[in-house]
Image 1 (cartoon, rainbow, N blue to C red):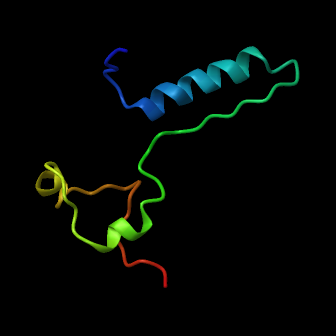
Image 2: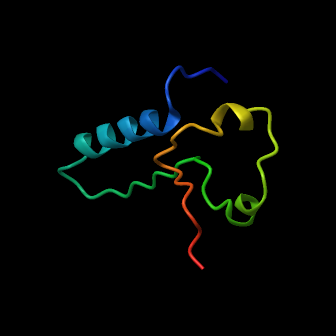
Image 3: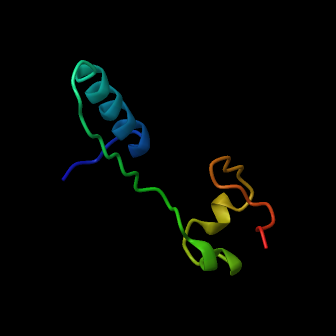
Length: 71
C-alpha cells in the first residue's frame, strides 16, 4: 500500500496509454476500470453526509455536474 500524490484516474490512464503504445503492433485486450464515484443515483437526491460536504458545496465539479436530473 502506498500514497499516490496525484489523481488516480490520471495515473491509470497514463499506464493504459503506455501499454497501448508498447503493444500497438500486436493484438491485445486492455480493460481499464476507473474507481471514480459513478452510479450514485439515488444518493444524489438527499443532502451529502460527509465531513467534506461543506467545503465542496460551492466548488465547480465539472466531471460531476449539479444540474437537474433527467426525469
